[in-house]
Image 1 (cartoon, rainbow, N blue to C red):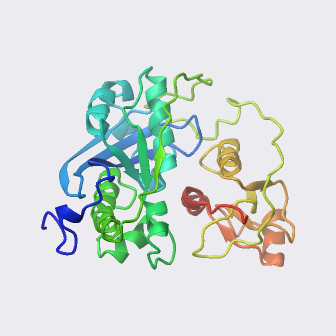
Image 2: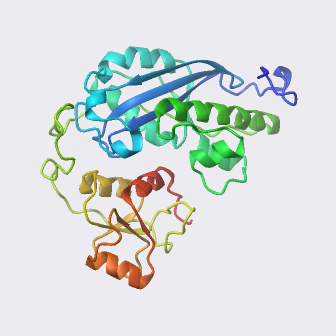
Image 3: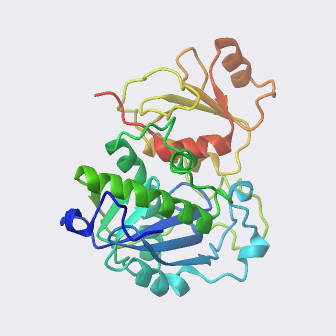
Length: 324
């Protein structure tokens, strides 16, 4: 690997570009504000996107690990892992003075900021760059904005999807040519400010790691009436396209992530959580599409798209804005 592409020289590199990047991926117990990090990886890159070093750690989330079938990290694996406060200093050293780069960076940044707030510390990050936003800025011909599609575009081979270290490696390898394309075109990078949390109010704790309890802890979070969705319904979800703000999403059957937390994350993303299925429903989420529940029967009769929980949580990472 050369230090610079032939088409982009140090002399023509945009002076306004950052001097270093930290490509980050975190795997978590779920998607809500009370979920925790179970593993983290950082690839440090220089100003032109060349890899300087990398780092990976497991993290004991002090609770049920959540969707093990996605990240592969069980309670037994995580029981002896360090707590986040024990790795916070090393994590900080990897982030310090660099732009945080991630695929759907708002998610990774929010999870990291919350962990630092719980530890009564502040992450040394001032700016973030989302590779989804950069791909859109460069008008890359991608079928969707999944990491696997970005990787395939640049010929980067994924070895272990949803493994933090491999996802960070894949993203680092895909980010470098994107960065060089941006530099060649003198594109302004879509940098956003990172605002650290300054305090954290804990909710009642879920079971500690090592105690293999059910993840359906429905009693630990009070229910409440949700505000109306501010976005119009754009219609039904289409396969291989992102969700769009305003879509009406219904849930049926058991979910591994607490139902209310999953609904919270949908609302935070700008979706309308529906309590029933109608012809206006954009998507039904169920882990048992063959069950003869009223919602699945209606969804099939109306031709409403159906996806499982794992697919839905991935779709939540790239929700398109509502039509202006």
